[in-house]
Length: 243
Image (tube, rainbow, N blue to C red; front, side, top):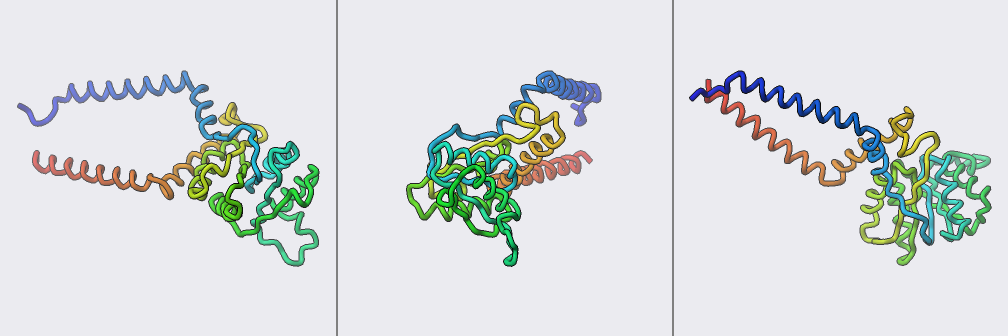
């Protein structure tokens, strides 16, 4: 019995593998629109309008998020809007409300008619969604029964919810995620707009990074690396035996 597989059988396997890959590629191309729609929809885990005690828009897109927060309060779905002051503001600034996301968000809420009693500022130096959420969680722990709605763009809600779930691990059922649309693109056409493709694909990369950094991803990578090392060792051992 020969130790080496006959060449014809190898060619058959290669052609079979090529046919399978080609068939999968053609199938994905034929169903590209439903697949692309599913890719966009999966990222959005926003909840329908629900009565809460507080609402806060995460920094990062003041063209839409503050408007949703203001409308929520005006509609009576929240009694107060929180504003995250995350920038370092100059002490000698003549108008600190006109600087950065904080100033624009605050100005938007006021122009929508919210009073001083309907706005609360949360101070803290943050540099990421994780930092923002920790700041919100610290404030929420002062009120054991309070609930909060967190506003962010639709494609960002899944990663934000994961971050919130970790920060609110001891505060179950205290928050909901609220989706806000993005100008020019959304789940139904993100791949047709350059900015949309960048935003949605980078969000998947960030999710993968969070999964590795904060979730079970590092253990799966370690397991995969170990299995690959064992397979490589066995392959080299088999070659030495044949030699």
